[in-house]
Image (cartoon, rainbow, N blue to C red; front, top):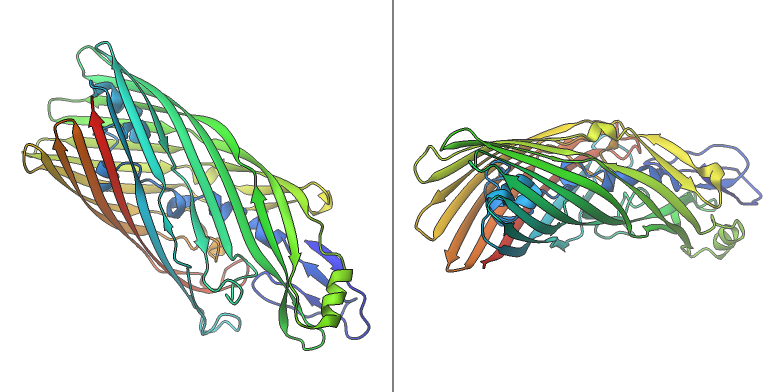
Length: 455
């Protein structure tokens, strides 16, 4: 916690916001807590189910993301790299997913701070793009390259300077982009295939919030400063391996593993005074010297993702697949943040995340020689303990339903799908670590489109 001593004659107090305010009779000072903001840093980038972006191909999305065993278009580079071994023509596809979130917070009825409050996300539309290309070599090898954004999103609250949680988080923005060159080989019999990819991941994060104090002249809470944490673009390398085994003419198993990855972030913290309208208080705050702008650094461990899928074409005109995906969030046990100018303020915060599983069932039906329809359903767990549920990440378990279509004409393909996600209401149960308690209600709609061309 960063403290700024302010000289003042009269009653002494301390103001602190980590969801609540306390008054204590000690030497007057305003303790400006950026630690509570930084401690929330992983919530926006230790993404959990709610901030991983699994929709990296429209066909797969239409099947609820159950694609590790099917993997029969270039997006296999993301879902199961072994699948490109069976793709024996030069092909490319580009597209993206249009994501819209809605989130509502309702304060706990017995909470003095949040009771009666209703807050909403600011409306934003996110469009993470993807692009893939595959080139077969000889009879058994295929090489390819893909670009996608498997993590990232934004939590930005409406009316940010009046929002009741603005001292915890106003805006958190994570951007991630990956480029993956890949190679895959299938056996001469075609019974099994193996694939390997090297993922280069770049990421940027920014976080903003206000800093409060108690006005000693009115005993009311006022905003005295704004802090923005902004990282440079940072990067890391990981790998992706996959395998497909054809059990018989109608059944196959797919297994894919994307490695854990650690990204070391460097950036800066900037503090800007907010005028309160009281010249004497503003002067006190100005003379107290807000914490200096300074460099900070931290490291974030992204989880590994392991997909296991079973697909069958035993039902005439249908391709049906069931997948389970395991994400190793339990490796994310703590966050360490280092201050370059004031190392005394460096700290370590426990996180205690848990591994998650998602379960995905999808089907693709051939309705004509050139057209398909798809259906999917999923259940996705979240890794976040209730103590961490708050303005920066109100995550919860969710269910999803998807529908998609595909159409081929000559060398061209167009794929489109829509995924509706319903998040179960998440109540903090009075246990939020920042004492900002209530219930979060979230929903999302994801529209995926891809255009493809086969040479």
